Length: 212
Image (cartoon, rainbow, N blue to C red):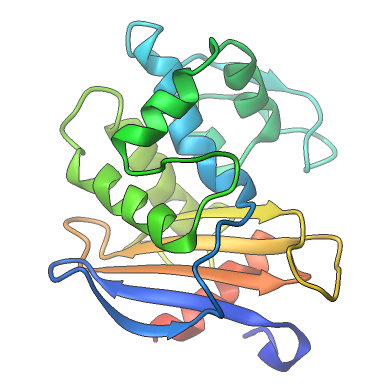
């Protein structure tokens, strides 16, 4: 069932990728904000670039999922947004590596990123699908949309969810985010959604409604 949006503040920006034109927007401003797990693909790519473009397998015993995710590789880690996996990768980065990778995709400051810059960074990620290390990230995003944390979106899309500290005056435990690019091959539409006071999976539910 679709989440009753009246229960939570919804912000979104939708872009036509071919023309880089905003086709729908309801976001008060473009101020940088915490985006939580939406940075995970760029953490992974920063790791890969200093580890022979290889991604590890990590055993997750406890995560946002209390029982853990078990043994996960990069695709499943993206699909399930496994905190243990990406904490492990980030802990092995040298100073400045994440920032350097983020700059390649147009993200000029961390940890807070403007929604427009983050959306463009994901679009650029799809444009670099043929570059070493990128295709496993996109496969993980496809799994996220079909069976993972963004499964409300459906299979013909790429998606990544996140939950970050709340940035609203009316404080909540966290705000949920999702970025969706559709269709999965040669995306034409990019969408970022923030849902006040709800996790990223609920933001994906709201995004599915906006894309209908």
